[in-house]
Amino acid sequence: MARQFDVLVIGGGPGGYVAAIRAAQLGFATACVESQAWGDPKGEVRLGGTCLNVGCIPSKALLQSSEHFDNARHGFVMHGIATGEVSIDVKTMIRRKDNIVSQLTGGIRGLFRKNKVTLLPGHGRFAGGGEDGWEIDVAGETVTARHVIVATGSRPRPLDGIVVDNRLVCDNAGALAFDAVPKRLGVIGAGVIGLELGSVWKRLGAEVTLLEALPDFLAAADADIAREAWKVFTKKQGLDIRLGARILGVQAGEDGVRVEYEQESGGQVSGGQVLECDRLIVSVGRVPNTEGLGCEAVGLRLDARGRIDVDAQCRTNLPNVWAVGDVVRGPMLAHKGMEEGVMVAELIAGQAGHCNYDAVPWVIYTHPEIAWAGKTEQQLRSAGIAYRAGKIPFAANGRALGQGDTTGFVKMLAAEGDDRILGVHIIGTNASELISEAVVAMEFQASSEDIARIVHAHPTLSETLHEAALAVDKRSLHF
Ligand code: FAD
Ligand code: NAD
Image 1 (cartoon, rainbow, N blue to C red):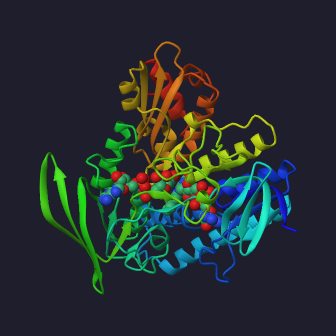
Image 2 (tube, rainbow, N blue to C red):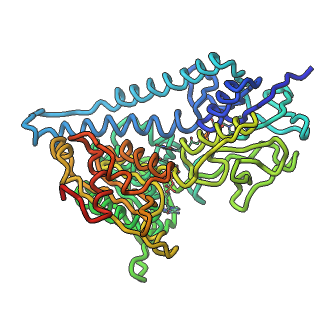
Image 3 (cartoon, rainbow, N blue to C red):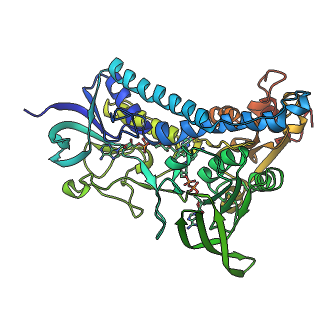
């Protein structure tokens, strides 16, 4: 007889493994199907998906290592610390990153054991069934489940005519495993991955050129933040970012990679441009994983962009079939997928289930970091929403001065009238941690006045949020 589960999750990334753990906590017999070994030395399936294996965690490990290197070379001197000649052992740096990944992916296996989630290694595919039970094929076995949560994630978007070999032409997986610092690194796409991984290899000594299709830099960010980031990344850090680039062809040979492109600027097109580099990263967005899932077999509906079509609570068009994470609409962020996983498990249990899409923070882990939650000024203006802005530079913050890290600012946007916080935008040191205060405030519909009246420890970077809230009402105390 087929094995039966109450809840079966397809995909063991942040959306899937968290959904599985929460479902098991709620008392459901739960299984999670995962197909990828992600380069595991024993060939065993690894949990954690893109995020743990080739995404969030390894990229942050390398960002940290490269930041230490950069500080040793350029940052410590202002503190009177002389380091002499500094060198980087890339193999050790990569090994450290790999160990962190192994530790965390193994940790999720441990969490599955603790919570009694059954791991089913193999590719999951809908075989049939309906409301009373869905049949899923996994590694030659058909299991049944009352509820199915699809959490199959995403993969790098391919570019026509470009073959990724993860040696010379790399996606994120290859770019996180270079064995040496390339002398010249090319990047197609100056988005989140391009900027984070471009920063890693730039700090380690590569000449980095990014070719971006759009005429605007960081178009999704608040324009003020994007302007500051442009200034810091290009002028201070020397990232060569070329906007309005249209890629015409990529050839990889033994001596490196040749990218042909044309560039549009101010209505003028300059054709015949060439970028020669030793390695190329292609980071032009990601596409949802729905192939081989058997969607057609059961009539699981996709949206116009090929993602699984879901409502605001992650229900698909099929009864008791749910979908979360990168495979559905919304930002492709690990924490968004995890919250959706929890929401769905709780909805299955008849609980309220909750994911506030208006308060999902974004973070780009460059240096300075960029973080925001809520609406940008350009969004508020185009929606005709009246607001007041309070902006405080880190240069006016004692802790930032002490750290020797004063680049950037905090900007708070609050509704004209009741001062409800509509958006918070940060570029500066530790922005990734500071944004949490803004998210909590927005989740509880707090106003800038509420933040202005909360005691913030001194001296801390969080005082910039306090001051920005005061600045909304034009009464900042330290600026
Ligand atoms: P995934 O993590 O993609 O996991 C899906 C899993 O499902 C995979 O393991 C896959 O093997 C498995 N699978 C797919 N189909 C099947 C099938 N049919 N049967 C069985 N298994 C299947 N987000 C952040 O929030 N912060 C960051 O700092 C961040 N950094 C990133 C850096 C990089 C370089 C990249 C590439 C991404 C980063 N992201 C970051 C995005 C984040 O990794 C994703 O949003 C997140 O992993 C999505 O989780 P998921 O569970 O939806 O999908
Ligand atoms: P992205 O959407 O952030 O950036 C892709 C960039 O490539 C865009 O600026 C786009 O205009 C550009 N582009 C698209 N086609 C192009 C072309 N043909 N030529 C030149 N440029 C082109 O996507 P990404 O950097 O690949 O990252 C994928 C997703 O992974 C992100 O959107 C994000 O959701 C997630 N991620 C998050 C983090 C984080 O949270 N810190 C880090 C990395 C990745």
